[in-house]
Image (cartoon, rainbow, N blue to C red; front, side, top):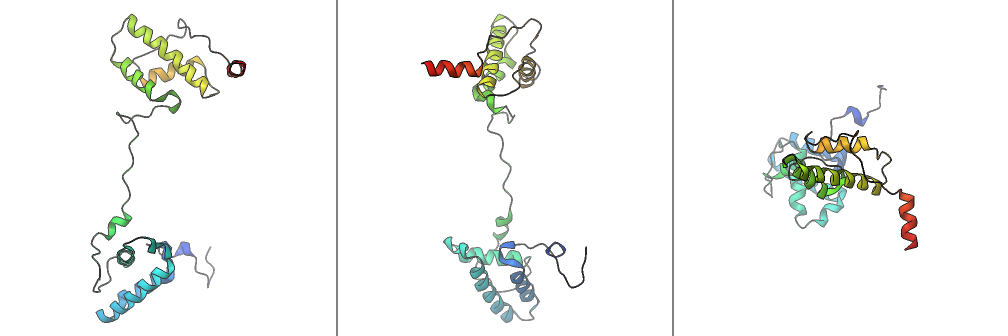
Length: 200
């Protein structure tokens, strides 16, 4: 909705450095348009003074003057022709976005936190183990430990199908539990565990 005489921020050009406000941005735009370098230099010094007053926290940095001139350079869209008292060639690094962090796993995959890092290593081991009694035993121990972990974390869905699905997913489909024959160990209910701890 446009109302004559009203100027909305959403209709204005986006600020490069919002912390300094639109008035200082207008001063920067004015400085760019001044005809002589001497006038632009004087105007830039005045703008820096106002920027410092507007953003006092910048003074906590030991190289805050460099920071202010870097900000001015960016706010001018690199168009302000003055005698820069500081090297502003690295100014654009201020606006550089950090690289996304990789998950803290060797293979970069996500594992549910409630299973823990040790279980991740077991999943990897299962993927490389040959079929046989040794792998079957590790599968049995792993599935039961997964169920214990879910119980400890108080998850509402601790059904066997979920564990079978998670185990298959985290082993890239190599380990498949046949729930018609596989038997989980009897897990104590959380309330029973708490009562036993109190008795001790």
